[in-house]
Image (cartoon, one colour):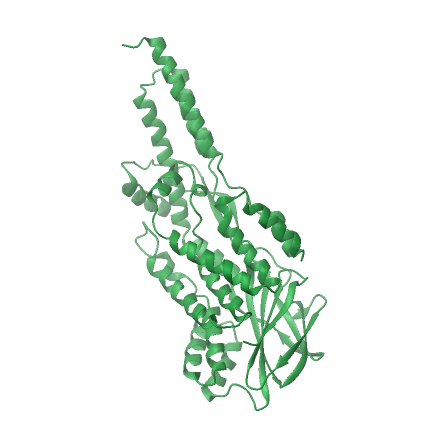
Length: 449
């Protein structure tokens, strides 16, 4: 039998090992990432932003996918649509793979936090990847743009149908649908001069999903008449990525009664744990929509004002609304981690037969440290725009000078940038511009697939 002195020494060694494990686990937290790279992008310094993203890629393995998403936006703004499409495809396939359950990783995240898990993307990010794939391909050759548009709607339906684990009622049924995929699909079907019925169905979905996008009413009237454009005319579509998009920050949240109900269901599935009557505030990520000084892009053609782009998808509203819809589940997961950690400490004390007051206090302190070092998972696609906007311009065949600049409240608020566009008879020409701030980022891209 061991002496009391030997047992104390053994307990101290076990406690030291426990403390080391707890601190190591907690130190794996995720800080607010890549702020410098994103600020360089907003300032229009694409070379600096690229250098910082490449540097971060070599050091942040768990951030690899969100880094690729940011790099894709940088490449698209710089006119490298093929490279943007390649990166977006990689992350799309990776996120699809990560939707499969990983029991080991899920268990580890309960003992640490969600930053230990491979990032599988938020629902809005999964849909926006497919939207940006369609846009990137359109600015390259358009060969797969229709397929990507269909993927936008398919992924939305799949996400909503899957729902949220532990919730009796599916909170995703209230998700607002992303209209951009259907809008671009309608544009492309109309451009064939054959599939006006398909175009009408797509534009009808846009009218239902984005009723504030008044431009779609003209689209519906036009395709119902079966006329793409007047003789010896073509169409220029200006797509604008406007404003700074959503990001995540850490916040403390109270465990609501609904969240506790969800947590109780999760606990019953992961082990024999009981939910305490009260839970201190837990750390969770919340989506933030920045206040933007730019809310549109004004357009002039051959020095004559034409109008301002209209919003077909509000990414900020989409992200914030989805975050709120699934908040109970987010809080519940944090509560479950809190319960599992406390249970682990109590079990360790029981198995080691801790009867010393000082040692008991040390165990409790270790548990507090373990909980305190937990971090909310603030990984996100940081260079999404606040809004995807568009305007349609029908013009005579020939070369035209297009001027684009930042706008707010329908009025110009900064200098314009210009590019020549070639209009072909009965065909579409596509233009893409990025205005996260008053200053344009990258180039004005043009394509006639």
